[in-house]
Amino acid sequence: MIDPLETERPGKEKRPRQIFELEDTGFNEVPPRYRRFYRRWRGPSDRLAPNEVQCPVCKVVIRSRVELRPGDRVYCMPCMSRLEVVEENGMLVGKVLY
Ligand SMILES: [Zn+2]
Image (cartoon, rainbow, N blue to C red; front, side, top):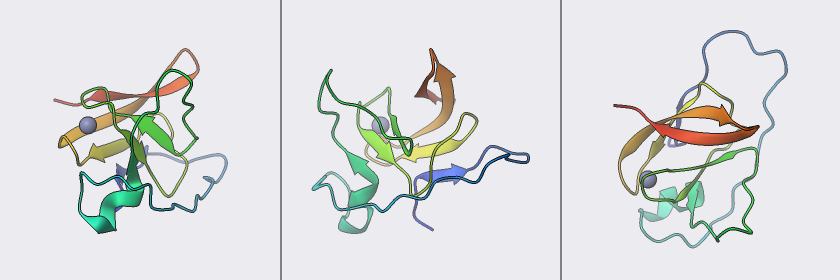
């Protein structure tokens, strides 16, 4: 398993997670087999999909094969940060774990 999603939120989930097909994004800051799991943020008009969260450290968008939910832990390979997915103003954001 090379998905950046390392740990799913513990506990029972009421509805199954949506699965996503990931295509290569051309993101070349990580080895080829990991490229589809990251992409560059395209600026203020960019929107995150339900399987995406932005890294607050390097601003790269982290993508998982499954929908992300608050409480999940993800790994940002470009800057080697471990993040927790939290909900802020109805949006999912990444928070650095120390
Ligand atoms: Zn990062």
